[in-house]
Length: 266
Image (cartoon, rainbow, N blue to C red; front, side, top):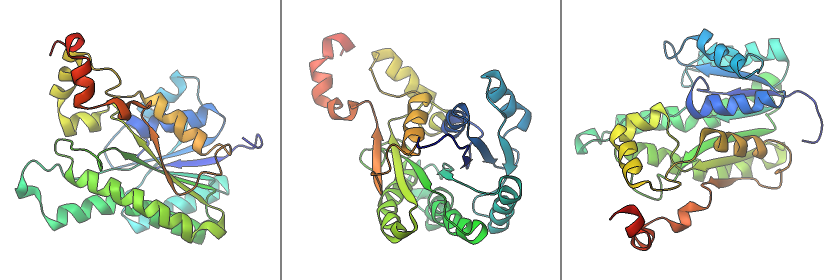
């Protein structure tokens, strides 16, 4: 980082999983973290306990629905009155309908997925200028390799990821003169409650059975990449989708299974 000034970092949906790990990584480096969460999704005491157990300062917690404009304005005004600024915005909320059959292919389901998982990156950023007078220095979204390959039940989730990865390029162009840096971090699967609710526990049992390496990456690996992208060291990278995959996407597929079939017992 270019200096030691404490930054103010907003992580939407940061009460668990990837979002919480990212929030912890910023807190570890001395930043003031604000976490939003949905109504009834988690107990605030549990989040604070997770931070203090690692010797980290407690985050500021705020219940806010990312698609509720009143919640958004109240959240940003609260941040302004308490901290006076906002330097980093991590758009982490992802909500979608699981597509188990063609019966789930409904316009309302797709639009709801976009509304929760894609549009906040745009609307929150726009409202931040209205409230603070300036945009945050960094806006970072999260994605997966769902747009490039099939995942069970993942149709609409993959569609929103692809939309985010496209919009980030255009947003970077439109906001370039404002010196706000947009990027996306795309990860391999990370074992979280969200992943298990999508693919099922049987998926974890399957990869364990065949001991397939690098099928998933760890939460902290994702958090480190997200932190570095907002550290000041990577400011020349703008409007990009950064792969956090250990480089393993290159070696995945039938060819690798063929090469390792004896080891895997296939």
